[in-house]
Image (cartoon, rainbow over all chains, first blue to last red; front, side, top):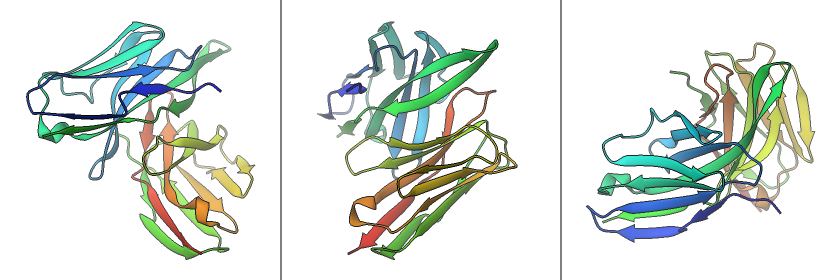
Length: 120
Length: 111
């Protein structure tokens, strides 16, 4: 049963602390996405990796957020320093890019269970 | 940037009723996806649509990819209590390579 896993599921921290969220994409998938979900903004894309290379991180506040893929089985999202406005649910999703006749086609994204972050 | 307008925002229906929700955009998408999110969980893919005009069913769910490629709808027939949740549409355009999500439709089903 292939699933995206995320750790931790819940994190409560104090303002100013560093937060690291981890994601294990589905084996064989070559795209990874980080989303943030809040009541006000809905699902917002933070970062997008294809074959471990960052393709789009324009949705991510660069001064405090960083996203990396140390290897194909691990993606991390780090916030340093954290602020109360960062409180949200952070989702990781993975997918598979296919190539058909030379064209690149994105496949569906499969979401992890999320990390609920509370910054006090 | 690209945006999706999803409606309605919320629905309160009686068990057994049919449900319809839709998404529209001013932009063209190559793929439309419909997700359902249960409380405390991540969105789960329900239906994927890849061709304009395509009509796809998954059990009691039916979704269509609009001919103009700027809209999609999702129908749920004979709703049951476990249909409760938030339904999201998402569009994928080849130029961006990432999903654009609607704001969601919150469905409540009264037994």
